[in-house]
Length: 343
Image 1 (tube, rainbow, N blue to C red):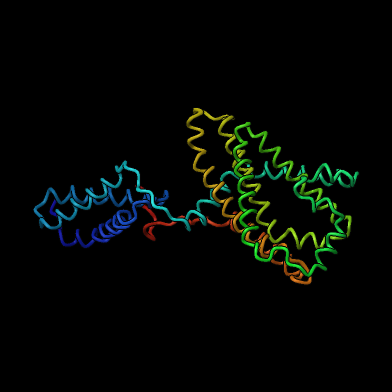
Image 2 (image 1 turned 90 degrees about the horizontal axis):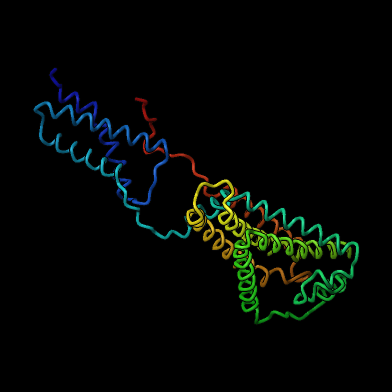
Protein backbone atom coordinates (compact mmCIF):
# COMPACT_ATOMS: atom_id res chain seq x y z
CA UNK A 1 0.00 0.00 0.00
CA UNK A 2 1.37 3.41 -1.01
CA UNK A 3 0.71 6.30 1.35
CA UNK A 4 -0.35 9.60 -0.18
CA UNK A 5 1.60 11.73 2.30
CA UNK A 6 0.12 15.06 1.24
CA UNK A 7 -3.45 13.77 1.53
CA UNK A 8 -2.64 11.97 4.79
CA UNK A 9 -1.17 15.09 6.41
CA UNK A 10 -4.04 17.25 5.16
CA UNK A 11 -6.61 14.86 6.69
CA UNK A 12 -4.86 14.26 9.99
CA UNK A 13 -3.32 17.64 10.75
CA UNK A 14 -6.48 19.14 12.36
CA UNK A 15 -6.44 16.31 14.93
CA UNK A 16 -2.74 16.87 15.63
CA UNK A 17 -3.33 20.58 16.13
CA UNK A 18 -6.25 19.93 18.46
CA UNK A 19 -4.09 17.56 20.54
CA UNK A 20 -1.30 20.14 20.64
CA UNK A 21 -3.70 22.84 21.84
CA UNK A 22 -4.97 20.52 24.58
CA UNK A 23 -1.41 19.80 25.70
CA UNK A 24 -0.51 23.48 25.72
CA UNK A 25 -3.46 24.26 27.98
CA UNK A 26 -2.64 21.44 30.36
CA UNK A 27 1.04 22.35 30.52
CA UNK A 28 0.25 26.01 31.03
CA UNK A 29 -2.17 25.32 33.91
CA UNK A 30 -0.79 22.39 35.86
CA UNK A 31 -3.68 22.43 38.36
CA UNK A 32 -6.29 21.98 35.65
CA UNK A 33 -8.30 18.77 35.72
CA UNK A 34 -10.33 17.34 32.85
CA UNK A 35 -13.85 16.01 33.16
CA UNK A 36 -14.91 12.67 31.66
CA UNK A 37 -15.79 14.04 28.21
CA UNK A 38 -12.53 15.98 27.99
CA UNK A 39 -10.52 12.95 29.08
CA UNK A 40 -12.15 10.72 26.49
CA UNK A 41 -11.52 13.26 23.76
CA UNK A 42 -7.90 13.70 24.81
CA UNK A 43 -7.30 9.95 24.89
CA UNK A 44 -8.88 9.57 21.44
CA UNK A 45 -6.62 12.26 20.00
CA UNK A 46 -3.58 10.62 21.59
CA UNK A 47 -4.44 7.19 20.16
CA UNK A 48 -5.08 8.67 16.75
CA UNK A 49 -1.74 10.51 16.74
CA UNK A 50 0.06 7.36 17.92
CA UNK A 51 -1.58 5.37 15.11
CA UNK A 52 -0.55 8.02 12.57
CA UNK A 53 3.02 7.87 13.84
CA UNK A 54 3.06 4.08 13.44
CA UNK A 55 1.80 4.42 9.87
CA UNK A 56 4.35 6.99 8.70
CA UNK A 57 7.24 5.06 10.24
CA UNK A 58 6.73 2.38 7.57
CA UNK A 59 7.13 4.90 4.76
CA UNK A 60 9.83 7.30 3.69
CA UNK A 61 8.29 10.61 4.68
CA UNK A 62 9.75 13.95 5.54
CA UNK A 63 11.75 13.78 8.82
CA UNK A 64 10.05 16.95 10.04
CA UNK A 65 6.61 15.33 10.05
CA UNK A 66 7.90 12.24 11.80
CA UNK A 67 9.79 14.28 14.40
CA UNK A 68 6.76 16.48 15.04
CA UNK A 69 4.52 13.48 15.61
CA UNK A 70 7.05 11.74 17.84
CA UNK A 71 7.27 14.83 20.03
CA UNK A 72 3.49 15.24 20.11
CA UNK A 73 2.84 11.61 21.02
CA UNK A 74 5.62 11.70 23.63
CA UNK A 75 4.11 14.77 25.31
CA UNK A 76 0.66 13.21 25.34
CA UNK A 77 2.02 9.94 26.76
CA UNK A 78 3.82 11.86 29.53
CA UNK A 79 0.63 13.78 30.33
CA UNK A 80 -1.45 10.61 30.54
CA UNK A 81 1.05 8.80 32.79
CA UNK A 82 1.98 11.81 34.93
CA UNK A 83 1.89 10.86 38.63
CA UNK A 84 3.23 13.99 40.32
CA UNK A 85 0.78 16.15 42.20
CA UNK A 86 0.11 19.48 40.60
CA UNK A 87 1.65 22.37 42.57
CA UNK A 88 -0.80 24.02 44.93
CA UNK A 89 -1.66 27.59 44.12
CA UNK A 90 -3.61 29.69 46.55
CA UNK A 91 -6.65 31.19 44.83
CA UNK A 92 -8.81 32.89 47.49
CA UNK A 93 -11.62 33.95 45.15
CA UNK A 94 -11.88 30.53 43.50
CA UNK A 95 -11.83 28.91 46.95
CA UNK A 96 -14.59 31.16 48.31
CA UNK A 97 -16.88 31.12 45.28
CA UNK A 98 -16.32 27.49 44.29
CA UNK A 99 -14.74 25.25 46.93
CA UNK A 100 -16.68 26.58 49.92
CA UNK A 101 -20.21 26.29 48.46
CA UNK A 102 -19.35 22.97 46.78
CA UNK A 103 -18.22 21.57 50.14
CA UNK A 104 -21.36 22.91 51.80
CA UNK A 105 -23.56 21.14 49.26
CA UNK A 106 -21.58 17.92 49.42
CA UNK A 107 -22.09 17.78 53.19
CA UNK A 108 -25.69 19.05 53.15
CA UNK A 109 -27.04 16.21 55.30
CA UNK A 110 -24.94 17.34 58.25
CA UNK A 111 -26.27 20.88 57.77
CA UNK A 112 -29.87 19.64 57.77
CA UNK A 113 -29.27 17.75 61.02
CA UNK A 114 -27.80 20.90 62.62
CA UNK A 115 -30.75 22.92 61.32
CA UNK A 116 -33.23 20.39 62.71
CA UNK A 117 -31.57 20.57 66.13
CA UNK A 118 -31.77 24.37 66.17
CA UNK A 119 -35.42 24.36 65.05
CA UNK A 120 -36.32 21.88 67.80
CA UNK A 121 -34.52 24.08 70.31
CA UNK A 122 -36.39 27.14 69.01
CA UNK A 123 -39.75 25.49 69.61
CA UNK A 124 -38.65 24.45 73.08
CA UNK A 125 -37.46 27.96 73.96
CA UNK A 126 -40.60 29.57 72.56
CA UNK A 127 -42.80 27.10 74.43
CA UNK A 128 -40.98 27.68 77.71
CA UNK A 129 -41.37 31.48 77.56
CA UNK A 130 -44.94 31.21 76.28
CA UNK A 131 -46.01 28.98 79.17
CA UNK A 132 -43.96 30.78 81.82
CA UNK A 133 -42.66 34.30 81.04
CA UNK A 134 -40.50 34.12 84.16
CA UNK A 135 -38.51 31.35 82.46
CA UNK A 136 -36.58 34.06 80.61
CA UNK A 137 -34.23 34.30 83.55
CA UNK A 138 -33.29 30.64 83.06
CA UNK A 139 -33.40 30.51 79.28
CA UNK A 140 -31.48 33.66 78.35
CA UNK A 141 -27.74 33.94 79.09
CA UNK A 142 -26.83 36.14 82.04
CA UNK A 143 -24.32 38.12 79.95
CA UNK A 144 -27.18 39.30 77.70
CA UNK A 145 -29.10 41.14 80.40
CA UNK A 146 -30.96 43.28 77.84
CA UNK A 147 -32.82 40.14 76.72
CA UNK A 148 -34.38 39.79 80.16
CA UNK A 149 -35.87 43.29 80.06
CA UNK A 150 -39.47 43.90 79.09
CA UNK A 151 -39.36 44.13 75.25
CA UNK A 152 -41.72 47.11 75.08
CA UNK A 153 -39.62 49.10 77.57
CA UNK A 154 -36.42 48.23 75.74
CA UNK A 155 -37.87 49.33 72.39
CA UNK A 156 -39.10 52.60 73.87
CA UNK A 157 -35.68 53.23 75.41
CA UNK A 158 -33.86 52.42 72.15
CA UNK A 159 -36.13 54.55 69.95
CA UNK A 160 -36.08 57.61 72.20
CA UNK A 161 -32.41 57.56 73.09
CA UNK A 162 -30.44 60.47 71.67
CA UNK A 163 -27.10 59.05 72.76
CA UNK A 164 -24.98 56.90 70.45
CA UNK A 165 -23.62 54.37 72.93
CA UNK A 166 -21.23 52.95 70.31
CA UNK A 167 -19.77 56.28 69.27
CA UNK A 168 -16.02 55.87 68.92
CA UNK A 169 -16.22 52.17 69.77
CA UNK A 170 -17.94 50.61 66.76
CA UNK A 171 -14.76 48.94 65.47
CA UNK A 172 -13.92 47.61 68.93
CA UNK A 173 -17.44 46.27 69.35
CA UNK A 174 -17.34 44.66 65.89
CA UNK A 175 -14.01 43.01 66.68
CA UNK A 176 -15.38 41.68 69.98
CA UNK A 177 -18.41 40.23 68.20
CA UNK A 178 -16.28 38.57 65.54
CA UNK A 179 -13.88 37.11 68.10
CA UNK A 180 -16.63 35.74 70.32
CA UNK A 181 -18.70 34.27 67.49
CA UNK A 182 -15.70 32.69 65.79
CA UNK A 183 -14.55 31.17 69.08
CA UNK A 184 -18.02 29.70 69.68
CA UNK A 185 -18.16 28.35 66.11
CA UNK A 186 -14.77 26.65 66.39
CA UNK A 187 -15.91 25.17 69.69
CA UNK A 188 -19.09 23.87 68.04
CA UNK A 189 -17.02 22.16 65.37
CA UNK A 190 -14.55 20.78 67.92
CA UNK A 191 -17.40 19.22 69.88
CA UNK A 192 -17.74 16.82 66.99
CA UNK A 193 -15.18 14.72 68.87
CA UNK A 194 -18.01 13.83 71.28
CA UNK A 195 -19.50 11.85 68.38
CA UNK A 196 -21.59 14.92 67.59
CA UNK A 197 -23.53 15.06 70.87
CA UNK A 198 -21.83 18.25 72.03
CA UNK A 199 -22.39 19.91 68.66
CA UNK A 200 -26.09 19.00 68.69
CA UNK A 201 -26.48 20.35 72.22
CA UNK A 202 -24.96 23.65 71.12
CA UNK A 203 -27.35 23.85 68.17
CA UNK A 204 -30.28 23.07 70.50
CA UNK A 205 -29.16 25.70 73.00
CA UNK A 206 -28.80 28.40 70.35
CA UNK A 207 -32.25 27.47 69.12
CA UNK A 208 -33.69 27.75 72.64
CA UNK A 209 -32.35 31.31 72.97
CA UNK A 210 -33.57 32.28 69.50
CA UNK A 211 -37.05 30.86 70.06
CA UNK A 212 -37.34 32.41 73.50
CA UNK A 213 -36.31 35.88 72.32
CA UNK A 214 -38.56 35.70 69.27
CA UNK A 215 -41.72 34.72 71.18
CA UNK A 216 -40.97 37.27 73.92
CA UNK A 217 -40.88 40.19 71.46
CA UNK A 218 -43.81 38.85 69.43
CA UNK A 219 -46.03 38.59 72.50
CA UNK A 220 -45.05 42.16 73.43
CA UNK A 221 -46.15 43.37 69.97
CA UNK A 222 -42.60 44.22 68.91
CA UNK A 223 -42.27 41.96 65.86
CA UNK A 224 -41.13 44.79 63.60
CA UNK A 225 -38.40 45.84 66.01
CA UNK A 226 -37.34 42.20 66.37
CA UNK A 227 -37.03 41.73 62.59
CA UNK A 228 -35.20 45.02 62.14
CA UNK A 229 -32.84 44.21 64.98
CA UNK A 230 -32.00 40.58 64.13
CA UNK A 231 -32.31 40.25 60.36
CA UNK A 232 -29.37 42.45 59.21
CA UNK A 233 -26.73 40.42 61.05
CA UNK A 234 -28.71 37.31 61.95
CA UNK A 235 -29.35 36.41 58.31
CA UNK A 236 -25.61 35.73 58.07
CA UNK A 237 -24.69 34.90 61.66
CA UNK A 238 -27.25 32.13 62.21
CA UNK A 239 -26.43 30.25 58.98
CA UNK A 240 -22.75 30.58 59.90
CA UNK A 241 -23.41 28.98 63.28
CA UNK A 242 -25.33 26.20 61.53
CA UNK A 243 -22.42 25.62 59.14
CA UNK A 244 -20.12 25.37 62.18
CA UNK A 245 -22.52 22.73 63.51
CA UNK A 246 -22.39 21.07 60.10
CA UNK A 247 -18.59 20.90 60.38
CA UNK A 248 -18.89 19.36 63.85
CA UNK A 249 -21.21 16.68 62.52
CA UNK A 250 -18.88 16.00 59.58
CA UNK A 251 -16.13 15.41 62.14
CA UNK A 252 -18.46 13.16 64.12
CA UNK A 253 -19.27 11.17 60.99
CA UNK A 254 -15.58 10.66 60.30
CA UNK A 255 -15.06 9.41 63.86
CA UNK A 256 -18.02 7.05 63.82
CA UNK A 257 -17.66 5.85 60.23
CA UNK A 258 -21.11 4.37 59.70
CA UNK A 259 -21.08 1.96 56.78
CA UNK A 260 -17.59 3.02 55.69
CA UNK A 261 -14.96 0.51 54.66
CA UNK A 262 -12.20 3.07 55.25
CA UNK A 263 -9.94 2.95 58.27
CA UNK A 264 -10.22 5.55 61.04
CA UNK A 265 -7.16 7.40 59.74
CA UNK A 266 -8.44 7.39 56.16
CA UNK A 267 -11.82 8.81 57.24
CA UNK A 268 -10.19 11.64 59.18
CA UNK A 269 -7.83 12.40 56.31
CA UNK A 270 -10.74 12.52 53.87
CA UNK A 271 -12.80 14.80 56.14
CA UNK A 272 -9.92 17.18 56.98
CA UNK A 273 -10.08 19.44 53.90
CA UNK A 274 -13.86 19.78 54.21
CA UNK A 275 -13.60 20.71 57.90
CA UNK A 276 -11.03 23.41 57.16
CA UNK A 277 -13.09 24.75 54.26
CA UNK A 278 -16.30 24.93 56.27
CA UNK A 279 -14.85 26.57 59.36
CA UNK A 280 -12.81 29.13 57.40
CA UNK A 281 -15.97 29.96 55.45
CA UNK A 282 -17.79 30.39 58.75
CA UNK A 283 -15.10 32.79 59.95
CA UNK A 284 -15.47 34.97 56.87
CA UNK A 285 -19.25 35.06 57.22
CA UNK A 286 -18.95 36.02 60.88
CA UNK A 287 -16.56 38.85 60.08
CA UNK A 288 -19.23 40.35 57.84
CA UNK A 289 -21.96 39.68 60.42
CA UNK A 290 -19.91 41.46 63.10
CA UNK A 291 -19.45 44.53 60.92
CA UNK A 292 -23.16 44.68 60.10
CA UNK A 293 -24.24 44.20 63.71
CA UNK A 294 -21.95 46.93 64.99
CA UNK A 295 -22.50 49.53 62.27
CA UNK A 296 -26.09 48.81 61.25
CA UNK A 297 -28.16 46.45 63.43
CA UNK A 298 -27.68 48.43 66.64
CA UNK A 299 -29.35 51.54 65.21
CA UNK A 300 -33.12 51.69 65.17
CA UNK A 301 -35.84 54.12 64.20
CA UNK A 302 -35.77 57.03 63.80
CA UNK A 303 -32.05 56.72 62.96
CA UNK A 304 -32.54 53.87 60.46
CA UNK A 305 -36.06 52.86 59.29
CA UNK A 306 -37.06 49.32 60.17
CA UNK A 307 -38.24 48.73 56.62
CA UNK A 308 -34.74 49.43 55.33
CA UNK A 309 -33.15 47.11 57.90
CA UNK A 310 -35.61 44.32 57.16
CA UNK A 311 -35.11 44.70 53.41
CA UNK A 312 -31.34 44.67 53.84
CA UNK A 313 -31.41 41.52 56.00
CA UNK A 314 -33.81 39.76 53.64
CA UNK A 315 -31.57 40.57 50.67
CA UNK A 316 -28.55 39.22 52.54
CA UNK A 317 -30.37 35.98 53.32
CA UNK A 318 -31.49 35.60 49.70
CA UNK A 319 -27.97 36.21 48.38
CA UNK A 320 -26.46 33.79 50.90
CA UNK A 321 -29.03 31.15 49.94
CA UNK A 322 -28.23 31.63 46.23
CA UNK A 323 -24.48 31.59 46.94
CA UNK A 324 -24.47 28.37 48.95
CA UNK A 325 -26.80 26.51 46.60
CA UNK A 326 -25.68 27.86 43.24
CA UNK A 327 -22.12 29.15 43.33
CA UNK A 328 -19.41 26.85 42.00
CA UNK A 329 -21.68 24.78 39.78
CA UNK A 330 -19.73 24.10 36.59
CA UNK A 331 -21.07 22.92 33.31
CA UNK A 332 -19.04 20.18 31.72
CA UNK A 333 -16.61 21.76 29.29
CA UNK A 334 -14.72 19.99 26.55
CA UNK A 335 -11.36 20.86 25.22
CA UNK A 336 -12.98 20.78 21.80
CA UNK A 337 -16.46 21.44 20.62
CA UNK A 338 -16.55 17.98 19.07
CA UNK A 339 -17.67 14.87 20.84
CA UNK A 340 -15.20 12.08 21.24
CA UNK A 341 -15.83 9.39 18.63
CA UNK A 342 -16.49 5.91 19.88
CA UNK A 343 -14.03 3.24 18.92
